[in-house]
Image 1 (cartoon, rainbow, N blue to C red):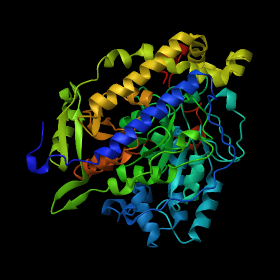
Image 2 (cartoon, rainbow, N blue to C red; image 1 turned 180 degrees about the vertical axis):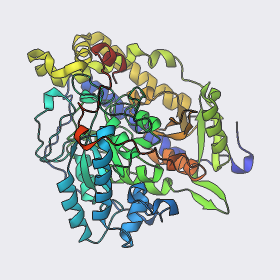
Image 3 (tube, rainbow, N blue to C red; image 1 turned 120 degrees about the vertical axis):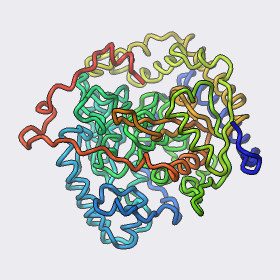
Image 4 (cartoon, rainbow, N blue to C red; image 1 turned 30 degrees about the vertical axis):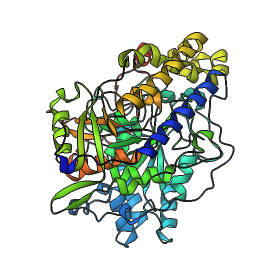
Length: 541
């Protein structure tokens, strides 16, 4: 599956990649040992983040597509940033356009649980009085409801936090706001980030924006609300978290580009935890460049989260996501070998995706094997060793009142009952799996296609989910690429180039039929089904 010699993958900076892998392996071993020894299981934010705003280059601004000019909610972050930068769009008008869609359609989508209309309007007016200095200036975002937001209820869609009002923003939110972004509201999510969005007692809320009339269509994992808000053009972009696929899965399900970075690349301070060694903050965006803009703002060292410290510098993500297009030809800025696992191309959409990649200058395809004992090391038995990590910080609640966990209580009980010997064996298996992925997969490629997000979630390696087509019924089809530690730029370079030669990411779902004003409530929206405790245990991330 190799390309001709003149465009085969160039020798990348192997020394840097090798160093990054050794560093990540050592850090993972240290964190694993700390967790096994009973170290603090939840990130603690000592105070609100007050660091510097990163620098953005001109590649973060894109002249809008002609078809996007008629409706501000169609603009990507990069396009809206260009319009605001050159005085062709006011932040207040951009925010108002999104609030109008929320008012018209969120009774169907059920993407938000809190809409901050007055705050967003005030922030947009203030942004209009300042000179734009970043591409996020005046950009309206949706924030998953497990991110702390100062003075705004943060529930993680759980009975346990139903009255919690944080005293300050999560670091990731603070960074986005420092860069000029505007928070439109908090989004629905799986209770405590376990399943698709439901009420704490299991009633399904958020639907897939592509099939709003069919609640049975999978909208993705626990970041459902953010995904639906962005796909339904009620927010320009948004934040999610991933522990078992909750960024890449909803991105694949709703035609978005979702970037889950390397463990530690983005601070977890001020995010309600699910699993200390597997929680990843990230972004759900419309394309690779928007994901890069969001991640540039969110990433970086944070004194409140030791996992963020001592890492390699954040690379030029925006430049990586912006391919070179000349005379009808597209090429990546740094040559990349894309590894293809056995059986991946059996699906026609995946084969078409690989065929499109193979025509891009600088991208080569290489067959790579599954690492030794892949099925065993990534199976349910070893995957479940994450459960004690989620139970440990919640033990006071487990001892006092199980009703607080609602329909997701089974997973917390399973974690509390798992034996220490099993947990330690699982941690050792995790390190063995990481060694084999780094040595047996990434020795042959720079990024690799994924058939499931779970293995790279276990390992803390970066992933990106993005659209590659649609089913005959019009439901989006996506795929996932995984990369080595701290090399999010390689993932973005492949996806940015692919999106330069395809248009799947520009397609938007039709507007739903808006209910009458008198019926705009969850109860009036009708029964969308319910997840039982058994359903949640099967789907739990």
